[in-house]
Amino acid sequence: MPNSRARARADAQARVRTALCAGLLAVSAGLLGACAPTADAAADPRPLVLTTFTVLADMAQVVAGPDVRVESLTGVGTEIHGYEPTPDDLRRADGADLLLANGMGLEVWLEQLVAPLDLPTVVLTDGVEPLSIAGSAHANPHAWMSPATGRAYVAAIADALTPLVPERAADIAARAAAYDAELATLQTELVARLDALEPGRRLLVTCEGAFSYLARDAGLDEAFLWPVNAERQGTPQQVAAVIRRVREADVPAVFCESTVSPTAQLQVARETGARFGGTLYVDSLSEPDGPVPTYLDLLRHDVDVVVEGLTGAPGEEAA
Image 1 (tube, one colour):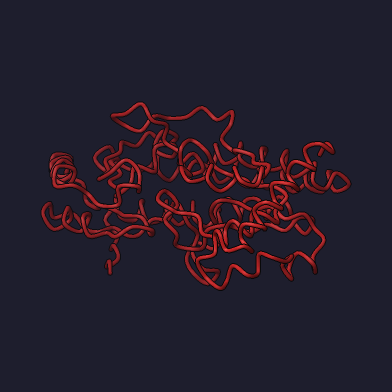
Image 2 (cartoon, one colour):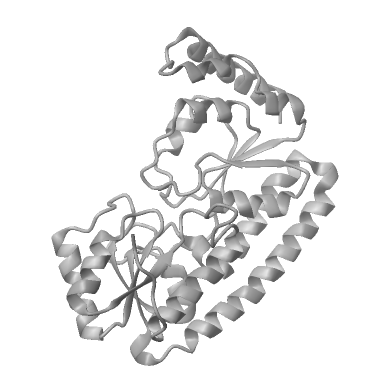
């Protein structure tokens, strides 16, 4: 990093720390830790890379290996669209070397986090051809839901991490290449499974319109209650429209994502006779002992649930 940029960032960080310690942003006693370096930072000299959500953190950690510390700003189960940064997020970002974000309008809160700190930020979807959210001119931000597009994320992550530890460039490149190969194989496997669905079983009905990239790859049609989870609840008009679509297509199962309530989708199931086919994961991984502890697990799980639901296998009960 050029000296002038380093000085500017240091000045910005100092201003934020001063504000925190002076109480201008002090909304809890926990902010006192911002006045000094964290124990983790003092004990671990590796560069710290933050990501905006857990899926990106897992991808980045695979590429980083032991050479870079990777942490997610948001925790497991967090709804990323409507997230509001906390003072603790500001403290953590103050000590980071890089932030990896998805972009495409997913993290509408990002600017208020990074602007005070001049935190270097890489948007992983830069260069990815976006799909539009059905019925709007807005980009669908869930590009990682296609393993093929996930490969572009991996390449961008490798490019972003290498300058942090240039002496480990060969290792980062090797891990990225191996990960890319895994995703290429997974893309072939998942598309083949979805391609095998019968013509009358090719409508994927979800709460959020988060599956456009995977649906494109596999030639599936989509129906959803709301375009993005910022809405979180289906309006009566949205629910009625999906009910009509499910009835017309005689869809056997409908699905919802882990970070939102399935209440509206359960209403669709009740009124159409479709089953609730199961919970899908999009914006968050599960805990390590859960069904989707990694990005690759998330993709496999979702396709398993969709195929089982649309081919008549028993669905799961929703809470």
